Amino acid sequence: MILYPAIDLKDGQCVRVLHGDLDTATVFNTSPADQATKFADAGFQWIHVVDLNGAVQGKAVNASAVEAILESVSIPVQLGGGIRSLADIERWIEAGVSRVILGTVAVREPEIVKQAARRWPEQIAVSVDVRKGKVAVQGWTEDSDLDAVTVARRFEDVGVGALIITDIDRDGALMGFNVEAFGAIADAVAIPVIAAGGLASVDDIVKLREREGVPIAGAVLGRALYTGAIRPAEALKVAA
Image (cartoon, rainbow, N blue to C red; front, side, top):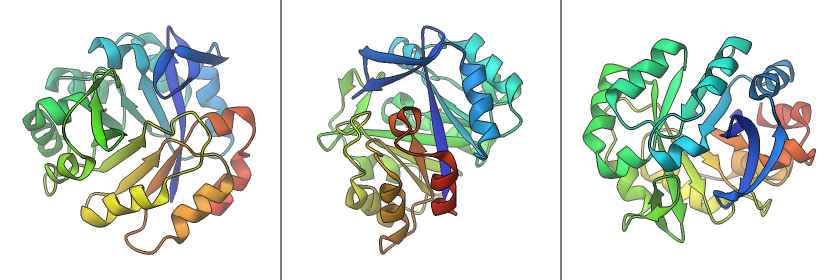
């Protein structure tokens, strides 16, 4: 299982928010590049970056911070937030992003995702952000009438590298993973699933690994990592 330490960007800083609400942001590092270096030095193999302002506004807002992260580390970076077109995707892949995460367009313009996945196989991930059973869009400020499996199944067999399933109701709250919800999606589709939202302790990683059914491919580590509730070395050992 691959662990993805998260760098959520708001106003150029590395923050954590509760349930996606930008007004709840706590700054953990004013230098996202420094944070990325710390994660790489701790032994993580990937970094998960989200432009929170961009997700709401529908365009890149924290581009300079993302570019600084890309310059500071050699491990792969996956990036989401405000990426809405093939031109946006191409720009970031050319800039060095290893995997581009698409959320809102996966709901509203799925053909863009399919075209991107065919053009850049395995370099496109679909973000499926779930609140009370329905998929949210536009930086989680709006809800759709679609469930996670319906959205995920749109992208079977087109070359999507991963599904990042976020439990908004638990995101940032340190409530523990809803393992069964993640597992149900993993069992329903052939695309690898990365779990996000609610991770509270190393025990959550253990539970993900031990569940019966299709293995969960990865997990995003957020607030618990920043507060010290999870130590990198222990988490990486359990995941491996």
